[in-house]
Amino acid sequence: MRVQIVDGVIPAAEIVAGMKAGVDGAVCVFDGIVRDNTRGRKTLFLEYEAYREMALAQMQSLAEQAVTEFGVRDVAVVHRLGRLEVGETIVLVVVASAHRGAAFDACRWLIDTLKKTVPIWKKEHFVDGAVWAAGEPFPEGVAVSGSAGDSAERGARS
Amino acid sequence: MVAYSFESMRVRVLYFGVLKEIFGREHEVVELAEGADVAGLLAMFRERGRAPRSLWESLAVAVNQEYARAGDLLHEGDEVALLPPVSGGVA
Image 1: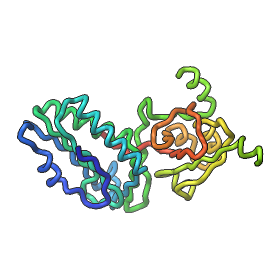
Image 2 (image 1 turned 120 degrees about the horizontal axis):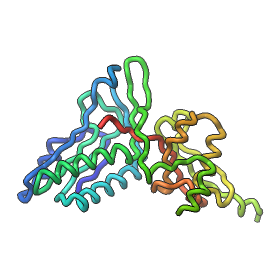
Image 3 (image 1 turned 60 degrees about the vertical axis):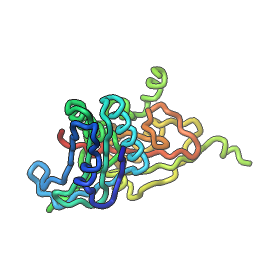
């Protein structure tokens, strides 16, 4: 498994080529790239930051789960941080498997789960200002539901 | 030596994304009463009133790099990260 957080260009083609083995019948690739707009607002560049050690551990855990639960042979998950220009690769997910069904499913699950649970944030720089992207709500089991006074209730349940 | 040291503890709190900008720093050491939990720490921050209420409600918290629940107890020297919703994107 190749799980990395990098600060420079992700060599996508090279990583994909390196993932192929004789027993594979399918390699499914998700290449997440910088789009030139958000809802029509023109993007100059994006800036990514992470809780780096935790993000890497979470990505490693997702990669292991993907192999175990989808029965694929191997996966690569690589995320880049820092300033990224339009068209550059932000995150690359590669899944190698004997058959395409598992490869597609694992690839989709990996990127969707990564986007919801791995502590990485995006700041969008537009021509007319910059904003931290409003992320999706954390899924159950990750969200702290952290209102004060909630703890007694949770304590009783656990 | 002082009773004080038995009644309080210190945790290191890390801020990310929009919270880092709101607080104007990446981390700080926070003193809490012994036996404080994650919800207690969050309540303390909410009282500072510097971040919008909606943000506190959407937050995740990691203690020593594992996602934590509101009722999890904190301990001296813990690393507590306040995590705004992650980058997401339209599926």
